[in-house]
Structures are given as structure tokens and as C-alpha cells.
Length: 483
Image 1 (cartoon, one colour):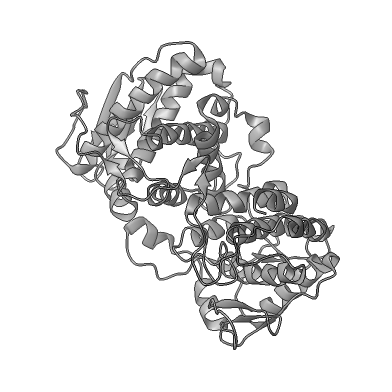
Image 2: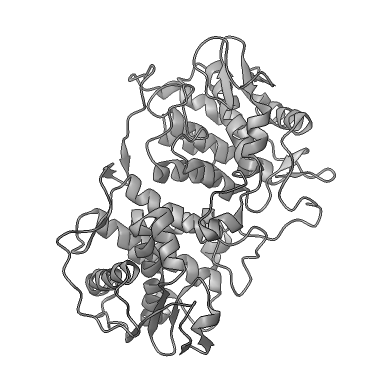
């Protein structure tokens, strides 16, 4: 986050505050007291729990791959190529009225030892990468660094995600104008389409159509979202840059769009659509901290002022943020931040939040080492905001421990973020802040997506979807989607 430099046009949360009262009319009767919240569905599918990955019954693909090894990474990659090819062989005639031509060339390489000239570059210089080369219709992948890191950190479906994405570019090459792709199409549009195509492919797997893979709609999709988070652009990247792929927030949006609406919708992504929602942008010149500020008494006072001002229109006295260890004297505690209903306070553990608010350690991410950092300042602030909105909802007699409370909370955090983006006087989101929220939402015990008792929504897919819904559509959508 950043401190606002000078007065900007204020867009307060009074619209959010007014709309939040709509929640009162549709509170679920199935209230939960001391039990984890119910799981619901994901995009109309039941939430499932099982080990995701290559099926025991998966056939051996008959594919010609240059420089192939007998590694587990190559085994997964080749199966993924065979599988996504089968997917597109069905999708092309159905959605685009043409047959799918198989990719002409496949290449596996190890950048630590192989020196192969591919698409005008040497694989020894490509590092952690997987790519599609349209001039020779080739999909290549790094089996030496990237795929092992993805598989070890996130599981086998992370490997399938990367290959599915690269195949998305092969799809664009075949569709051409049917996907609006020309030589002038920006990189960010191509990348958003490819992520979306990947989501459509994973829906096919989740529905049980794959001969090679199985993916649960809980832990399995979490692997996918975590891998998309990993391959996000650095904060401060411009969406207009030649190398722009999107923030984690942008990339998960595109993936979920494909998962929910299918491949034909992905082909409709164009520059205007991307421009209307993309969050990737450079740092403001006045953002001297490059997106990072400290979690301390001063910034918590600023957050208190921002929240009180934002929710003044509810007519509810917002809770006070107090540094009292993150626990409540009575009722449930959810450290490092807890909403204490008896005293109408948000009790915080400042030291724990300051640790959480340390910048994400990108070097540790890239090397697979234990991180020396936290999840970023916005993750820490958003946890406090999530407890504050418990107090606002409680003041409006809205259930804060029912089945939808966690998702509604994440949605309201998203709506609050969008509202302060255009001019809160003291705090404003910086590039990368939404990615820090996603990092927190992918934690097993996410507080941003939790009810007052600390029980989070069942899975990362639903949590991120809720945050995104609030960010793009505001709090009325929160009340409608999560009554």
C-alpha cells in the first residue's frame, strides 16, 4: 500500500455502506456456531477432495519429442500435451467449426546443460521458461529448473497448467482472426486469452473427461491457482510492456473465466475487455516505498481513519482497532486480528501483523527455499479490514457466522479495495497489493475469507472469486451472491 500524497478526489465507501444493508433481508437460516462452514459449489460443480495428478490408468502417449528424458517432469509434460491436444480436438469443431491441427514440434530441454538454438535463442540462456514458437509451431519446456520447481512446490497439476497455457498460444495461432489475433495484438491480450483457454481445459479435466489426469475442485485447483500466482509479473510492470503477462489477480481472473464460461468466451477477450479490468500498472511516482509501508501504530491509525470514513454511511459505529494481542476476552479469537463483539473492537497483534506484512521474498519463491519474508503489507491490512467489516455487519444485524459469511467478507474486502483505489486521503492500494491478498487467500487458514469465528471458505478458488467479485462489481454483488 502507499500513503496518499496530497488530496485526491475521494471515492468513499458510502455506496458500499448503503448496499451492505441489503444483506439483512436474506440471512441464511443455517447458522454455524463453532463448526467449519459448509463447502457449497464451484462454478456449478461439487467441491471434491482427492489427490490430483496423473491417473494410474493413463496410457503412454505416442508423441515425438526432441531431447526427451525419462524424468518425471517429462512424463507429466508429455501426458499434458497429449491430453490438451485431445481437449482441443473436441473443442475446435464444436466452438470454432474447424479441425485442430496437432502442434508440429515438441521440445524438452535442460537450461543447465543443453545448448539448443530454438526460435532465435539458445536454451542455455532461457532459464526458467516454457514457450510457444509460432514460426515453427513448437511448444518447448524447461525440464531442468521450472517444471521440477513447480511440481515440488505446488504439485503435478502446476506442470499441466504451464503446458496448457503454452498450448493456448498454439490455439491462438490456429484461430487467428477468429480470436482477434493479429500482428498488432498486444502481449497482455494474448496472455490473458491463453490463461483463459487453460481454465477451459481444466474444467474439462474436472468434469472427468481426461484420459490422463484427475483434478479435485479443492486442493487440485488450489495447485493451479498457486502456480499462476508464482508465474505472475513483478509489481510495477506496465500492462503495455512487451513482456506483460498480468498480475496474479489478472491471471487468476482469466483462468476462472475460462473455467466458468468455456473456450468460446476466451476467444472474445480483446484489448477493450482487458483494458476495462486489468490491474497491472506502474508504480505511482509518489509511491516512494514502491508498494511497501510498515505495519505500526501510525499506519494502523491511518487504516482506522480510512475505514471509519468509508463506512460512515451505514450509521453503525465501526469497531476500534486496538493493539491488545489479537485475541478477545470473550468469544472466539482469530489472531493476529479478532473482532470482539462485546467491546466492538478489532484486537490486533501488531508484532505478528508486522511480520506478516513483510514483503514477499521472491528469491525464496524462485529457489524453492523457506521464505524470509511475509505476504506483504496489504495482506496484513486486509486481515484487519476483514475483522472490521465483521463489526459493521454485526451492527446491521447481519449474520457473521453463517455459511456465506467468509465469502461475503472477502467480497467486501475487494469492494473496499476498489473504492479507496481512486482517492482515499490516507491509504491507497499499490501495484501488487491484490496479489498479496491472493497470497493470503491461498493460505489454509485465510482470515480475509473467514467468518467471525475464523472459519474460512472451503477453497482458494471460491475465495479469490469472491474478492474479485467485490473488486469489480462492488458490495451489492456481495449481498446478492453471498446472502
